[in-house]
Amino acid sequence: MPLAGRAIIRLALLLACVPLAGCNPIFDVGGAFFPAWLGVVIGSSITVIFIRWILDRSGIEPFLGPRGLVYICMFVIFAIFYWLLFFQT
Image (cartoon, rainbow, N blue to C red):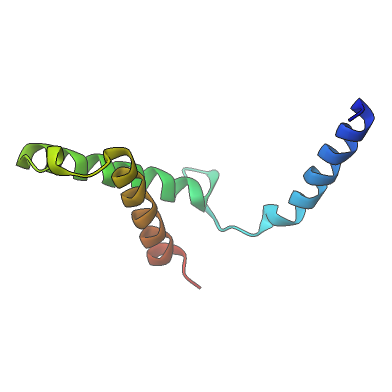
């Protein structure tokens, strides 16, 4: 594909994303505005790290299935939970 065709596709994708910029809630932290998904990601990460620490201390972690998949699934579950808890409309 020629370089001009790629540039047109990139520009079209960028312009398609512009209307989505105002769709997510924003919260204020010390005068700075942050998108809500950033708070959800940070909260979910901290929760998964804490649960991993609990599983490690209790000796259950070696018996988990594929750990990467388990922790990613836990992250997604907590992200959805926090989103629904704080930002449901």
